Image (cartoon, rainbow over all chains, first blue to last red; front, side, top):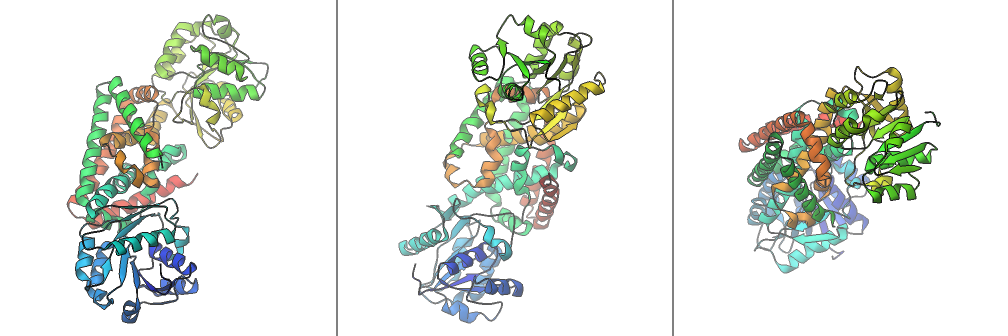
Length: 283
Length: 283
């Protein structure tokens, strides 16, 4: 990536902040926009950005060559519709959003001709939020998914993957927005829905002292950033509802075998789950 | 614990083998009974037991002062009914079973007068089975639960807790068999039922390369010893069915909020799960 380019990170949260931190540390010129004066001060004080603003930021938009949106989907779409006209042709933009359908096409449609938006999703969330925690985010073993559309160019896609490499991701792949959202509904959102439901099912905190690793592992992600996850769940609700229904049907099957004292049927489910899980152990 | 006593481990599997290994290493005299000639040879070769048999073991039963049953519940109850009459008065016995109701009273009723069975559950399972894996089992951070009944003596209960201390457990507590089974239905069995159902819901192994830590953590326990878990699930089916139903109701509630686009309702569930999960982080 060209070190002459000026970067702009819009939204200096956990991921936007981490991108700014890494890019600055590697010698890129990074500017930033955030609504929060505290966040701006933190980013400047820690050298995550060379310059930044909370308002009247038309100059930062105008001067940016490479842009990352570190915003939630609804806020992102709104921001692009209000300020996206200010980007210069030739500017390349990506994002960090955890859902893609509707968003990617909407952002692309709102941008001026010659400004390319190549959507991507760094799958490296944490339970924490905000720039003060961004140094804890690890990209090394995480997946980076680029979700191109027909509006994207090979050069734009290659740039987005190069960015992922600079950020330290080793597993970089491409999916359509639809395939991405189906995948994320299963491997991430369904897991969060399950963990949350398990904690909400009953107040068993008196049992906390008896819990072993299984329970802790399964519910770790029940500590959840409520604003972001409500947003992600609702943007992808069709996929998530479908996954919940498939999962509930499997759990109902298991319950039916218990009721029927069907030992062989239970063992068959356990053998299937053991077999399938093995595929997920390979990295 | 008195080093003059002779120990007998009946069933040299993952946990029985681990008990034999630790007790022998600490200088106790340990004998063993197993149905498998291979297991017997392994236990003798590795110094886990000083002597052992696969059949005609009446002398080992007769000579035992302290006994641990490392058997599945159904096998355990059957074994005690066939051979339990051979124990001498004064003998103290415990087990490693993951379910207690029905089992504890049944074993106590089948033993001769003066032979005391103090049930316990070392909550330290793994996905592996068999004596060849027993050295991998860690007791240090695991829970050891003693489940006494009215038939037990303070001295018997104290002995069982002392055993837990020798084995290296730091968290030792007491629950009634009924409270134990309710607890285990929630913190362990429901988690396993969920993980198994998630893997059985659909064949998504093509998604394996996109999975992050959430999914791996949640489904790690879907690799399951089918014989043992079918046994444990069926022995505790009333509690487990009840937990599955409570969990399913919570997941249905979440789904209902998705369908209704109830963002505030979702955020409320996420706040509750975050709050409750925090209690489980403290050790």
